[in-house]
Image 1: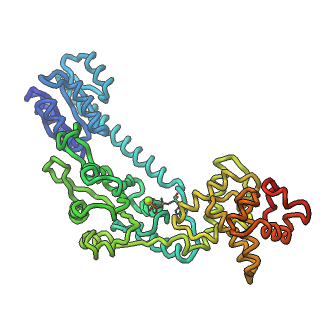
Image 2 (image 1 turned 90 degrees about the vertical axis):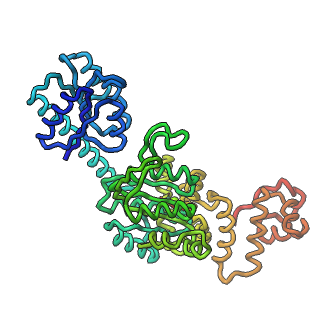
Image 3 (image 1 turned 120 degrees about the vertical axis):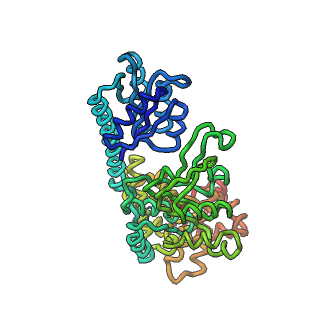
Length: 465
Ligand SMILES: Nc1ncnc2c1ncn2[C@@H]1O[C@H](COP(=O)(O)OP(=O)(O)OP(=O)(O)O)[C@@H](O)[C@H]1O
Ligand SMILES: [Mg+2]
């Protein structure tokens, strides 16, 4: 039932209007001045405020402006005496929807209020639809066919439609946030907000005011009553990222909200109900933190009603070619480059790495390669340094069985390449004398038998092997 607040300093007019509206079936409240009205608007969501213009203290025009700031969804109608058109125009300029002139005409009141409320309902519906469309449009997809990842996806399918709390575990860069968004997208809450907050990045006091909201004056700097993220995520999903990093006292406060579904803004006594689904994520070992007394056991049990553990990339290497290919194509499109894929050697180098930074590290490495790449295929040289080094050794591994001699050759050539073909420096690094190095280079076919030795330091870079 729509809630309406009637504001007028004249008791007779105020209650007269309220009576008409109650008869129409609306829930109506009254306020005798603008200050009291504003205080109510901060506490409660009204669909419509009908306010007189001329009042002692704050006038109706200012109230219109303030209500628009505090509660943008609320519609406003101003009540003007003697059909004062000018103040009606001023009010509309400041955000009022319409005006009513005193003395009231019953039909006009009914019609104007009905129109304003219909308009609001339409706008609310449109907002919901827009969000729904945004959620339905394909977001970044969760890629992966490996058995390890498919198990996570199956679990995701089962937990998404519920309203239960979900705890997502996994190393850094394994896709925890992406999975949290997907849970929301596949839930009946998809058309409502998904609000992420990085709990690890904020000190307690800030995290508290962000999550719970606060009344004006609750602390220094609280110059405006503000709703918290729990309220903003009402009917939607709140994603508490890096939950392992919050203090014990914050854990206790959160536990209370999770259990009761109620909260109070800082500096207020009013209890507010919220319907929020919690998805939390962490890369810490919460079980171990509980044992160490760093994490509350009751909060841990409350969070892990359903937990979903994402495998590290090294345990799902089957997915690597597909993931790397996907990131490469998206970079190619972004950089307007034509890149067909990875050379065998470069793909092998990617497969030889153990990816401590998981998918994020892979994404960044591929971007690095896509920027440097000048041929249709990404070559080993385009990869970040660490991976390039791996390539030399996987080149050796390829020639199974690996002989010590082959490894030695690869190592010498790699060192020479890194020294820009500078033999003196290479020999020094390798701990052998220049003659020995020279002999080996002739053996490998990268130095000529005669007259090459003294060209020494300026000799051209050997072809890569
Ligand atoms: N299965 C996947 N398919 C495609 N892209 C993925 C997948 N998983 C993760 N990504 C991408 O990898 C990057 C890292 O993912 P995300 O931010 O979700 O990781 P995270 O686990 O939250 O990391 P952190 O613990 O460091 O916060 C993102 O760019 C994300 O789009
Ligand atoms: Mg994350």
